[in-house]
Length: 595
Figure: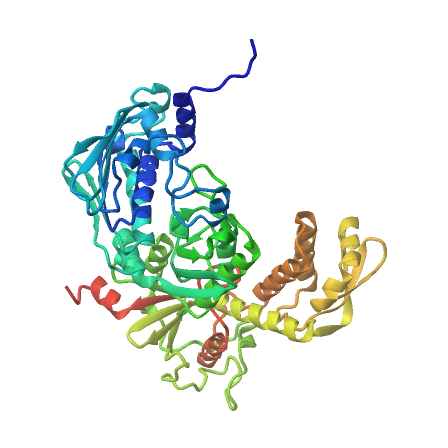
């Protein structure tokens, strides 16, 4: 006998179920997608035991007649695809025709449906592969699919299900995504007698995001819109001060379908580059992309969780550009809300630190005591006394263009300013580092190279053989960055000149850092632009005012005025925030001045 044989249809359906039916939430997803494709404007989901015992999805869509119900459980039976060409223009959420047959092979399923305008409905049942003929039934217009005993007769699959609470959590998360993607549809989720989610139709997406993830979060989001070459982007994204430790709130929808897409995810990371704090913080972003169905292939994953773009580079450019423009236009600083259903630990720690360590002990004006490099931020006003000769003559009420007035400096690191109804804390090093990074980068773009400060006496530095070779290989890049370094023997170099932007010249230490960047870049295959960017970052960090540098009022004001000229000053090049804003309402609440 031959080895090859045709599988029993029931086995085929169970194999298909293994691809698309992982847990109760998978069943809910398939049934809700069918309801949406049927034009439903209200979808009610009821579950029992987290969906393991019962899943019921009722909708007010078009409904099915006797003939359609008779075919509903047949493998690859669908109303959404007729030819191969249709697969190139898929505009529906479901189209494979596997869902009902797959679910019916691993559970007991009953479908009751009535087309709009029909006098009566019909019901059909599938008991784990045994499909009954449709019979008349009383029903409202629309469709009700009832699934009982998921994997009851497939113990090998059922043992992989989690607790009822865990499975219910997956269903709740799924319904939240549908609610955000389809604001024109009402959704309700019920377990037993308890309503877990009841979202009316008609609200906009920001309101839907607030209903699912909290009003405070929704209020903080920036709306973004744009289009390019037939691709349309709509989204709500968090400013740099709003971030999380995981990617659960990075949600991408293509044609209403929630997907995990590497192209869009990479574009989001690029847009938030150097804006988020270190420590693998992730942004909050709800992005909705639409295009002609022929421009995206949604048939590359059994559960339709991934897509393939015909022109991924265009999508990437659109997402990165639109998000970056919105982020750079957002007000700088971490704003601490009065209340938040989604507290940010980094913010809470910063606030506690500031209040515990003496914001209230700020001096009435910034000290002018001499500090190495303190005069690097700005030149003092004409007639100002020399450093160390007493307080600078600076009007205490002078404000920046942002309406901020210097109040004091605490812990030798944080600047305290007063604005209209708020107190602003500024990390002087982080802000100055961002300013220098942007200014140095601008000089490189405009002039092609940094100015060189020639040394009267060259500094000879002994290097290892590999480092000396690296200096010779990267001589052009070093010259672009303002370094004149020449060989001096076999394993040594002579620094003839260094970047004029370095205000704390330590040629040997700074060159060592630059070479470290270049060596790592060569090992990791970084391109020249990335190498230059990281090297500029190191130089900006070296040149910025440090913790412990005492600044005069005019230096603080000059620092903030320079920051105002930037596209953004939310964070240092490493992603650490530069400012923390405390509103009057928050302070009054903390001190119990208001109820």
